[in-house]
Length: 276
Ligand code: ADP
Image (cartoon, rainbow, N blue to C red):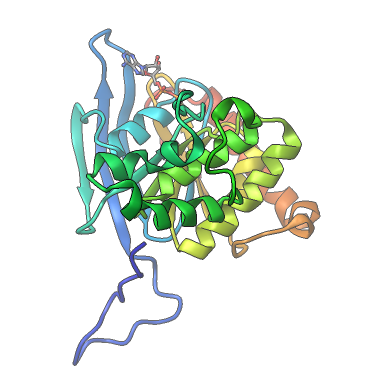
């Protein structure tokens, strides 16, 4: 993980304020994406991703959340507009809704995969794989196979695999949607703790208002047909948060605000201006 660069540094520069805005990592400018079946998945999306933030993309199915992640990952290109990377390094990790582990390989080999693809031997990779497994609470599970693990543990392996290369940006596509609520709550807390420890930047796709408010610094609300950004909600409480925050007034109020933004998003007419 790269340390946050000062916004101004060097002789004669204006000193940075402790509340200086976060450095930009990437910016989508008027991004449109249409597919050959004429689906307009995204229309004129402006979106900034700032270093060290936890950003959620919230919206109903089909509003283009996954398409934004795929664009950021370079798996597809915009039909219109630009993605500007404002950082020299934009290596990234991707966590999908399904853990997508290789069933024939043990936990170690699954986490080793991205390093192996980068040419690192098992021996060179070992400390990094073990560190990543420790970070997700799976020390000692190196030799277990995916079939021996619970859904939550498989997702932890998938997160370790995404983090093992120390990416500047972690993209997560509804990673906890298929998990039971208790496991999901625990993974939410562990993910935020990990994000804080690594000072990682996370772009997280969800359709859960509660999850997005609990996890995020900033929530971008999207509407479908065509997919577009219609509102933004800032969550001012510092990360990590805890059960007291979840039970408190500020959380409930932000959930109401986000929920209202999501409802207007779902009824927004195409091309309507941002509502937040
Ligand atoms: P979300 O993640 O918000 O559910 P997606 O980004 O997956 O939305 O999809 C946005 C829209 O684009 C949907 O209507 C979807 O069917 C369509 N879409 C996504 N990928 C493709 C593709 N490869 N070919 C055609 N249509 C696609």
